[in-house]
Length: 448
View 1 (cartoon, rainbow, N blue to C red):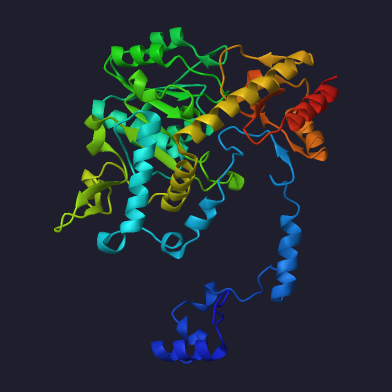
View 2: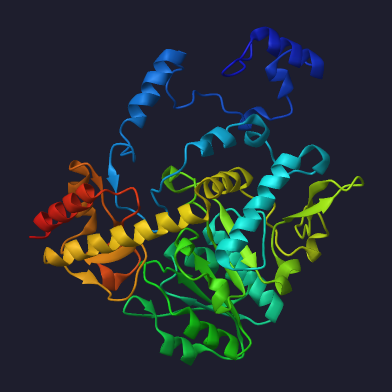
């Protein structure tokens, strides 16, 4: 019989107590002093029957503005993209759904091969030599890249662009505090990293320069110029990149990046209220043994048959803690699998087509805003996000848009004081011309 859950009956409880040699639950906790035991009633609702509970949870869930009913223009690192139906079919299989670390390769070949394919496709997208089996998310991957750079160069300064995602910069600050690293933020100039300011901050103490491509505002950073500055003093060049954009943009590896990191969420992973998602981490061959987490390698067995194993396991669960490259002790294998299935289903041409649709639709939307008399901030090349001035608090504007069945853009005033009343709008391949035109009309009416 298939159970949705396994209840504990009174008989189950009696048998468990008997097994541990006590007569009652009170006797089980006899070592806990009476003075510290909780004797009141918990401030929670009375237990409901299963049908009642399902109705209650359904009612609460229906209050969410979901992406099936609302047109979303909210991006800022998490995007509403097309996910092939096959993704859910594959990741729901029990051998993947319940799998954890594949310690025994002889019985984990499917899981290991899936991770190997993920690593391979990330390398192809980023133009890098090697990628690990995934990270928790893009933010922690970025911080780990900074830690690797500091350890490899034995330098203490990190230069990070203010156009890098604010949450990723916050995670970086947390990591840096524990390692006694100095993090300096490079200011913006017309929505991208101020190259002159970066040049002025660059010196022999800098471990790495970190930029985002496309950056937080959707703008395309001048990676060629930044790479020359980063390497001029033997620092490392770290690029955080939206992997879907690399279906159309020149990969960071072609610009001499030492480490490319990011979040694989655009490929087959739902928005899920911001997580969980899946970070990726790719480097040059030179840094292969410094990569945090673990890698899956391809080999052959004693009969010459193709097989997969965990290799270069430089994590603290596998080797001495003081020799570990990082204390990351897991990854996002299920979400990495989702990304792998999505990338495989789309193929090179499909990924390129979706990336180009993002560019095309976002530029159509930006042009429509300009024609409607609204100010589109920053004039550089961009991928699928751009900034508009809305003339009033973004929270108020978004509340009005929600009433019209739309999820508005990100409030940039939350992170950049100078961009109060500015909205970051994301336009993906799923947005229709009608939805875009409707957004422009409603924002124009509010702005007027």
